[in-house]
Image 1 (cartoon, rainbow, N blue to C red):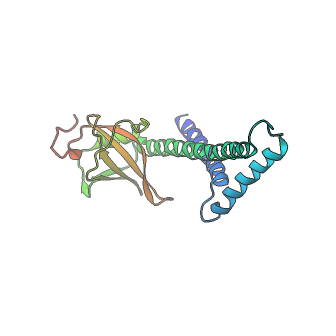
Image 2: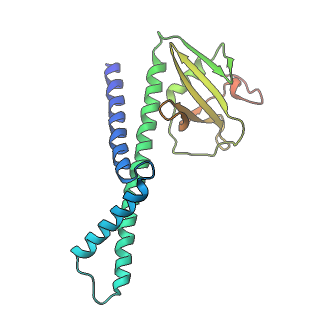
Image 3: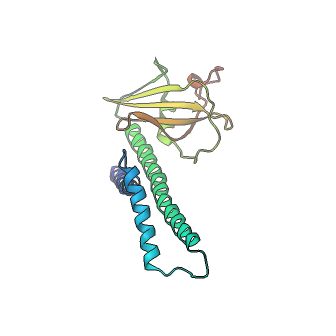
Amino acid sequence: MTDFFNDVSLFTYSTLYHILDGINSLFFPDGWIKFITIPLVILSLSYYFITSYELDKEESYLTQLLQVFIMVFALYFGIAGWSLWMKELALGAYDRKKIAVELENPLTKKAITINGEFQNNAVKLINCFRNIRDTSHQGSYYWGEKINIEIKVDKNVLKFQLQEDNKLLNNYWVFYFREEQNKYEYIGHIKTNYAGLSVDGAEEEK
């Protein structure tokens, strides 16, 4: 039953992401073509509203044209920005769920390295990655050296970069390496006092 709900959750997040990605691509396409399509659509919509509705004769014609243009411009980029934001939320939820599913199976072999060094006793740290939480960018991360972490799950390798949080004790910002994008992206926070992450040698979790 658990596997069924996991599959449903992953399918839901994936579907939502692709729908929002389609909306965002429609309103804000990749490449140089957007410099043609975006002005063309905004001007076309502005022309439609101007010709479809009578303008107030008591107000300046130029002012009303500008108001229509600003309204269309704001609406267009509002939808584009909303779809981009929601797309990233859906993708982050998908990543967190996918990571949790891969790490929760007790039968799979797991190995973790921190900055290239193998960790002998890091089961609780691995379990922390099953509970990554999106805290809506609370706190602020320390602009220092990133902590590179790899978790090998059978033949798969999950890659992360952690940044220590400046305001929340034992909290770390988690950046996950997305193969399809070939870069690290923020997906949430973990809370741990694992000694291997601390520069001052804090006591390891017990």
